[in-house]
Length: 442
Image (cartoon, rainbow, N blue to C red; front, side, top):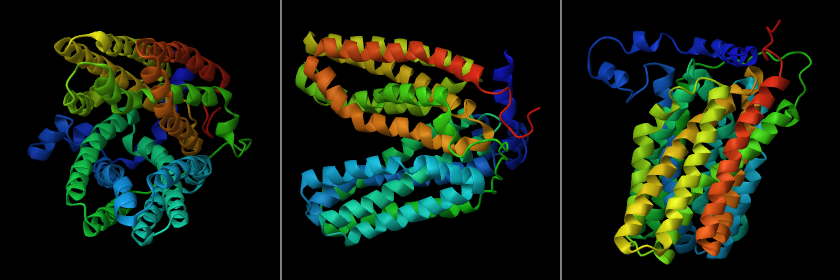
């Protein structure tokens, strides 16, 4: 192990002091809770379990909103679809600008306090939507909600790192699996609202989302405060933006993150419009992906114990994405049952790549950021992932659906190229930063 890699691990040690006891101590003994801890189904007692509960409730609210908000705006409020799309897109782009400055505040004031304020503001902004009856006010409320969401995301990065110590990547992988379950619960509840299709039902959905955010803030209040890590005297204010290797890493990870749109956007349209597979298989493919993420995300994070290992895993993910896109492309001219089998294999292989990429991305976002600027770096990293959500659907629509089979192969080749480049960027980052980024560095 090289010196820079060892220093990255040592930087994480101070964050461990907020989590009392070790997993063995807290999960020991008998009882159902101890058995669930040993199985990895719930975190150890203390901050990890409280933060997991807050994250779960938060994601239920987001699941409600994502599945039913557009219908609320169009069918209940009466705003045209085009205006709703513009408002949501503008809010998403404006929300990205909050990440770095709010992350900087979280580094200086403490991530728990900033996270709690951001979630409360988000709750108030969402609740205000029930009073919206015009396009301009929709834009204002959605921009405020997205700014708060981006701020909460930036603060959640250092909070997750501190709570999850000494293995933040494994803990964040657990939270991702939990988020998939919560989002599914929220989507199911939204489905009931959509079926009722009444003003009262839609208002209940929006207010339920706001209540979920308030409950999340209340749970976050039960967590111990995370003290800021002192920064070296010569550190500039916008350190993350000056870190060229990390900026490049953010851009590459943003490109790779377009893969998250493959199964939820491009594949359903490909199955229905370009293959002989039955329409019902769209739902099956999404269910398979969700089930695999819930069951295997934590396991996929094992062995990713440093930056170098994470870089290698991203390269492996690129290979998996190329194979998956080739399988999906092959379903284009295949008979019905063959198309089902080939697409199913493609979904499984793609999900394996997704698990690898996600776990490695978690590790790199923590490991290549100095301990005193985790919030600021988390905000920068979130910009890359946010942009991938914005450009992913139109890019996949043009390349995969517009070009057909060659387009799927082109996207797979792009993912492979990013995977091959990532280890070199990781090595560049390790070479160009000091042996230890904390204030106690010799």
